[in-house]
Image 1 (spheres, rainbow, N blue to C red):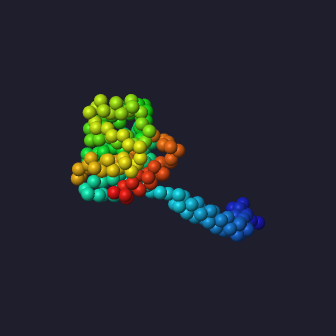
Image 2 (image 1 turned 135 degrees about the vertical axis):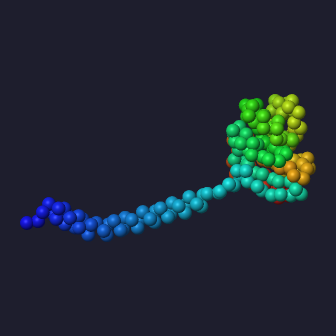
Image 3 (image 1 turned 135 degrees about the horizontal axis):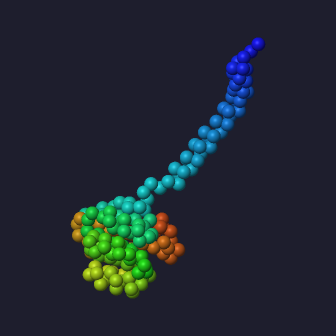
Length: 185
């Protein structure tokens, strides 16, 4: 007469024998699904594109694309990350985006601000009151050109827009426009 332990073991063995093909098939399908999801995720992954991305060094001037900086906190972080005198190209169009933290970084690290696109005179005046030179341009090409010619060897040009939307462009599109303007130098 078999013991309770022997019966349990026999039931386990039967279950394992009948379940193995199903478990194997299920495992194989899960692995394929996981590999496909990983491949899709990696295809969408851009690394550091448009986030403090070093675009180019030209005549001793570094160009940094931070088009992902669409909020005051992100701009603050971008400016805080700069270790060289900085010319900041921005699209900020409201005083709300010029927080005290951002203004503090502008005061200590920014040698000039280039307001690109449609601007607000209040933003211009607030920055000018701080004693920071401010230039207004309508196109990214003009902004990059002005920034470059106002730099000295060892400076950095940072593009950090500080707003979510600009003429319905995404941060990727704005970043690509910045890179294209840099490439034209």
